[in-house]
Length: 207
Image 1 (cartoon, rainbow, N blue to C red):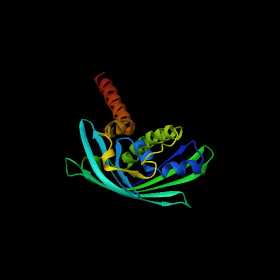
Image 2: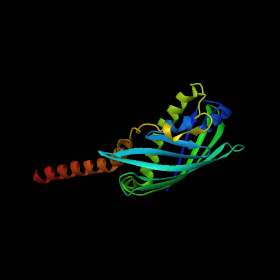
Image 3: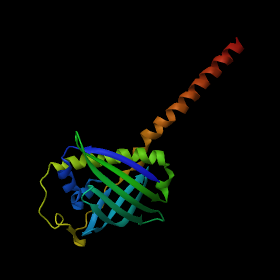
């Protein structure tokens, strides 16, 4: 499925682009994800999600290519459940452009996922993705206020020994619930009206 999201960060395009080049700083901004290793344009990491009481952990790898002139990044991602048969793969393209509020980031994701998260359709996944992307944008703003660290991570390398701890699961069910309730509001209201009308007709017939 193809998902499109966008958000704005309060920074000039050159500053935002410089941050996006530093995967070691950007990756922790994504809810539920940690970066384990980074070697040039190749990396490994983990993602943890939950749907209700069920938690799923994914371990995967990816590569990144950059188009400096277009301020665009392309990521190829693959992963699989550590305890399950679910798989996920995605091609993500992030494009940065000048915006009156700073920098507009447009993200297009071609996602192929199997297992329990696949129960959400494209519409719900898009809206759930919007919520997660907004959390990501908020964390990016916080990182933009911090000075860039001088460390191996800042130079584009994260050794295997520096693997991050277990990520905190992002709750897809909680993110989807408001969407499901909103979508159910219309049918629920129609059912309620029908019940009221039926009761009214029964009272009139009884009278």
